[in-house]
Length: 277
Figure 1 (cartoon, rainbow, N blue to C red):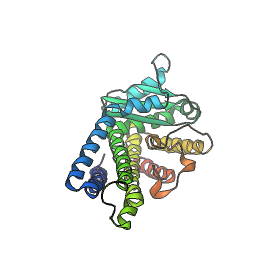
Figure 2: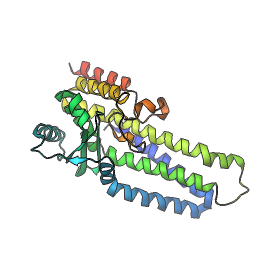
Figure 3: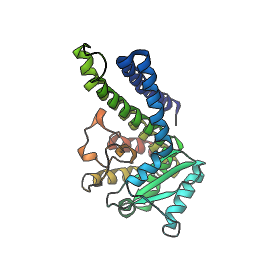
Figure 4: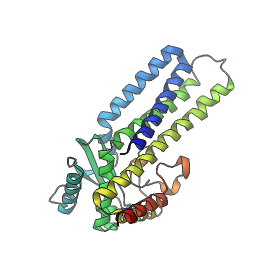
């Protein structure tokens, strides 16, 4: 992951933390700041240790044994070897919608999950490119960072709404409006910006490790097309984890999207293919 992307991500995380502490100060002054900080620590501690298990259970993901899918295991093993990473457990989610995601707090405690629809709809080279993308998320600690961003944004929204019913009733209408609308929206925008920046990084990683930027590009196009026609029972809170948002057809574009536009991702991958040819 390049330094610019790293700096941008941590700057955005700092903004989220700053918003949370500002709300704490608004509600309870210096004591409120300490309470808000303690709350963020507790939430992130829980998400750090157990978020992977929660997400896998949420989607009914089952472990894939080598005897049941030797090609899948061999491909993940090869990609991880090329990336210098330990091989994570592989999980299967039974749904016709083609998609994939990675989860876990670090490369030593990670998991990669693919759907049955992905295995059915894509060519093997495209599946390999998708797996390389997900391994990129593991390598870049994206799953941890995205979880931190999501939990901070969630805490900000909850505390902002609670602030309306706490403290001084004589606070200005403008302050109440900010707590109710502006602050939660700002937190969500920052979280979504983090998510979008991580996808570009994983695309680049996946293209390099798989050596197939065009296969990753075609896979993205197929998955997005399927997302508009095949409904996946996905939760909005975890939709950002998938390689293509499974709720794409229902999402607003631009600032309110969890992922960059697929067309832009495909354009960048095609540029990479030209540069490597």
